[in-house]
Length: 146
Image 1 (cartoon, rainbow, N blue to C red):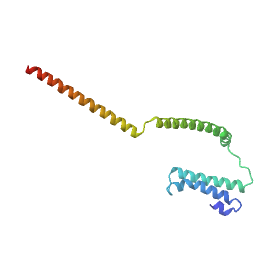
Image 2: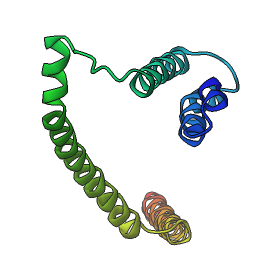
Image 3: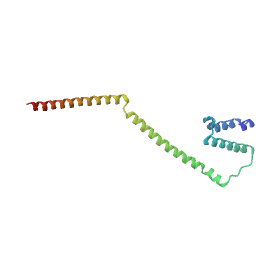
Image 4: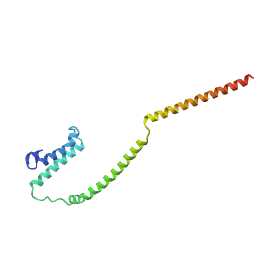
């Protein structure tokens, strides 16, 4: 915010940066966790680099390690994009399979009707078994009396 107040020409970009870097802090309801602290520190570092870049006409010489990292950045972004596309494809496939399974799965009313029909069939079967047993007992009992 101080950069936006000091520099009238670039105030929009400073306000944008201030908003972007405070979003994690606002998202957590002004509670600091590791992610919010890292975002705020990154924002402060970024603002200092921006201020130096605009005020110092001298080109900053990067150490060799940072240069190697910066040179490898495009390849890393490309690899990350490929990995992200692969993950997106995998997630999309799983979502489609889930939707297909959802469509194939019978609804609750149909399952209740099937369950009711099966219970009725079992009850009818039990009744028939009891009748047969009673008839068998009568026949066996009738045979003893003779």
